[in-house]
Image (cartoon, rainbow, N blue to C red; front, side, top):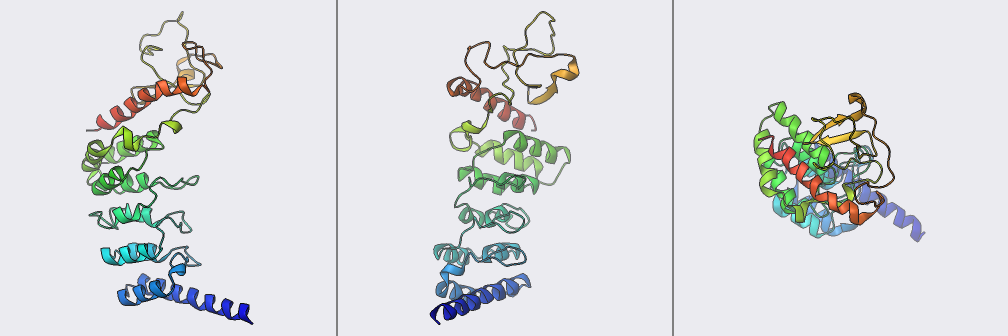
Length: 277
């Protein structure tokens, strides 16, 4: 009997969450009712709508509610900005969208874990902020310590908004340049995958001055040069696949050797972004 009452109680609570979510979805924002529910049922704050996977935080953001005190209250009571909806997006993702929070008023409170691992083929907070050309959002996520896990993707997305002459594209790139710091926003451990990722060093190869007698020190097909990718096979070059560096004689998996080249990776990344301006 006790278990039956518990099940009924949980069902009622979930129905109440669904009702609140539906009301918010149609623009019916009752702050007092939301706060009262949150205080009475804090454990239900991260319950998701069965059809969309959205939580209260998702729905408030999508309805462009910019009441800082309301968000603070919900977060203090246990609402998590890291719950994913059925599209794989969290409340933190949504808050990075210029068209949801253009002044980045709510975003700072949503970045409880801005370096939460991304699922395969899902958008990152960098993707959202860059795609929607959100300079204030970029400023906030940089300052809150968001790490650039995929520098190639970030730089290419910035290049795309510039080429498309998207509104606020230049301001978005500038916001990144002014607020990005390697000590805070650069994750060295993910930059080079031994045996797969290109390691570029200006002393290793100059593809503009091909010398047939020269040995090409690469163990993969592509060469990164000045932020661009050129396929060596397309140029008629067939570099040997090496199991260790011909310079250091260390294995590609040697972390000490790999860290030596991470400074170059950072330099290429920052140059590729700065040249957009």
